[in-house]
Length: 394
Ligand code: AMP
Picture (cartoon, helix red, strand yellow):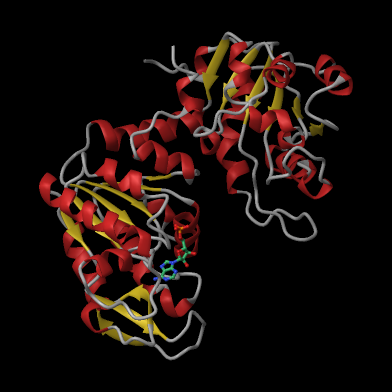
């Protein structure tokens, strides 16, 4: 199955509808606090502009759930995009309707129009065919460059394709799919997955599927304690999902059966509560006191994980090793970032929190690929077909 690139379409003087992910974080005054998602799709937008297309951009922002919420307007994005591109980007008052149709009709080749938040309409997330058709009427070609929403079948990424035959992927989506596929389909071995974060739930299926493909799995973060508990050890007040202890046991058994080496923390940084400046102590995983909780992996675990990754040729990572938002519990996550950054392996990192930790480190350019997506990245790693990608396949 092939996915066309935007480069395969003839865009000249055509209305080109591009789904992007402008779901940026905003402060209380609607100021954009991180414009990485806008920058990430600039090459696609610029390519369309340079090809003399009439560019119509569409995105969601937040979760307005079908009602108009001025605080979730994309207007600040239109302004920032204008600054970044050095040309005027017009903002439509809505994403469908007569006024929008007129604005689109009046576009000249090379113009850029940004539609208002798709999720002001209930039809977007419901993938309502009529809403999809109204969106599709705005474009002669459709380009999807919003990988972060590709795991959802919505009107703007899946429904529109029923009505526009000329469809392709933007540069960002193509890169995301290419890198993740490189790890999944034909990985250089040994292939290691590093997983962390608060919860096992939500990542179970991914871990299970990954076990079919990988050689090593390193489990850190809060989720590790459910596994430690499954080994019959006391974990004090550490985070645990009791209903998943049995599943953790199953995963460990499956890893053994598949010959996958499974690494858990051997020590952790403990504190009475998750608070900056609180008294911390390093404890072995066997000796977490009942009144304390493990909030980061300890130095021995960081060293162990580092040795385990030494000979790996492919490393995928999702989820922090501890409560990295607090400096006292950020060392474990930092150690993994430094290890991955220094590695010669193909390194692929993804997921909201993991990206945030990486931004703090200034080592981003030492990672081969950082996915802009959380859910879509994980679902694809878990071997799922993403509806937003599948619909582009020819
Ligand atoms: P997730 O959304 O499941 O990837 O979890 C990310 C969150 O896990 C981050 O906000 C971390 O602060 C948190 N986290 C990681 N390790 C721990 C831990 N040992 N105890 C509590 N929270 C943790």
